[in-house]
Image 1 (tube, rainbow, N blue to C red):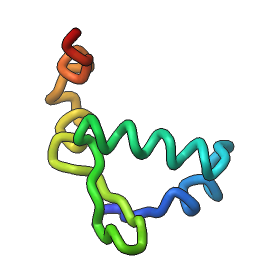
Image 2 (spheres, helix red, strand yellow; image 1 turned 30 degrees about the vertical axis):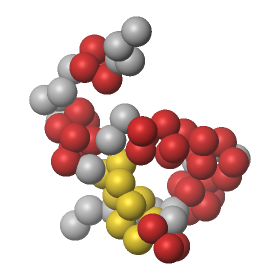
Image 3 (cartoon, one colour; image 1 turned 90 degrees about the vertical axis):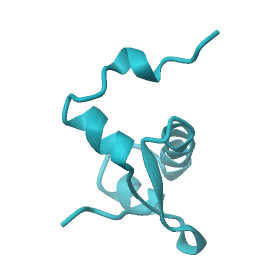
Image 4 (spheres, rainbow, N blue to C red; image 1 turned 180 degrees about the vertical axis):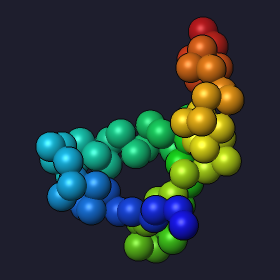
Length: 67
């Protein structure tokens, strides 16, 4: 079973403050590594791309911005 978490739950279980987690979740969402599980409640889950990255199937270089 996959985890579905809010920024508050992530903050409660790490050394990061809730606003910091929210900022990072926004970046991860922009990179399409996480997606909403329940947008109304701001609950996130890994996206398919995020699972691919975590399992080593997507190189970090593929996440870099093209400039």
